[in-house]
Amino acid sequence: MAAALIGVLAGSLLTSRANRMHWSRDKQIEACAAIVAESTRIQLALRRAWRQGDPVDWVPWNVALGTVWLVGSPAVVAAAAAMDQVFWDHSDPFIKQTATDETVWKEARGRMEATRLDFINAARLHVDPRHDQLTQVPVSRPPLPPSAGSPPGLPPARPATPDASLA
Image (cartoon, rainbow, N blue to C red; front, side):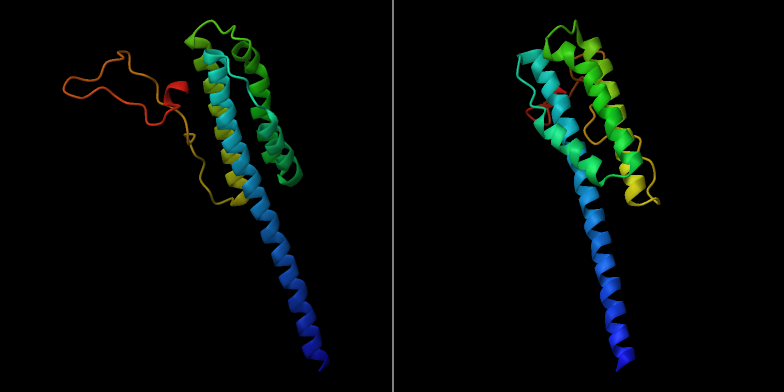
């Protein structure tokens, strides 16, 4: 009887610990996914702010950062902080519409996408150390060809999404 009771108690403790670990891992993945989504949204919002004068809503980005600070590993938090710093470094010229040309945007976009990739790789490594490093962010745009026209014999290219021209 005592052995059965000890077995039930041990099983209960192990199950409770496993549930807490799964909950924590799920929360970390959700927080990291929110950072990736919000960083993409902020990048596109900065482009719209520069080109169309639209306001940038920073609240969802700040909420995502706060969530990562609560549940993320130190490496994941550091990668999110680096991305936030890039937004701080580059936001004013686009919000104030003082960026001079596309070259300024391309440099800022490159830094935003590079820190997003660093974040994604830090998050993947934390979730499963067996993951390989990625070399391309999920929403980056390839450079435009030197000529805006389509190759001979092909119809003109169309944007894949309504916001494709904004990236």
